[in-house]
Length: 262
Image (cartoon, rainbow, N blue to C red; front, side, top):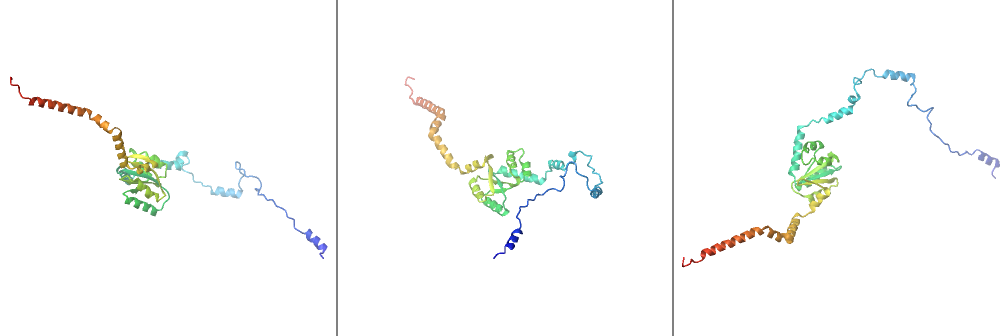
């Protein structure tokens, strides 16, 4: 039998389950930023004691003379050209002028080992991987036909711009080598002094110039080659024919026997 009194007591002392809602609130009033309250006397004494009493010598100067950023920009405008940079600029222009094919690459993050492997593969095909800083290109390009390349290089990170120089046009081999290294992204190229886009450069490499030239000659011969040759040599052949006729007439008159009455 369950004791009724004990059962009623246990029901009476059961804890009541309630949800407590808490919210953080700043102590006292909000901080007034425009009109802050005065500091505590002890803190105010420390602030007065730690306040620097040495005057700034540049306090009387205008703002544009006190700004360090403006001074830094003025120092950057004054460029001191190093003689070694002139040597590198001449070397850069020598590569551009002596190469029949120049490819411009943007190289993403790559290890020196992978970059060395690409340079070795290019060297085997008589192609050379070079890198020049933007400062060197600014010295080399002004006043030349390659000045327009600065617009292309400025859009990319100059430290990631690499050039591949080759005395021969080998776009197919260049594409095969750089395809193995996805960090090398072909931007443009220069063939015989003409700037070409990436697609135009690769399309030029897929062309068979010997077959194209033979087809052009065959078309010219079939269409108007014979007639054109006849028209160009018409006056010369007519003149030669008339001179031959005059020569044969004169020889025939000399070979006639003289008249007996004469």
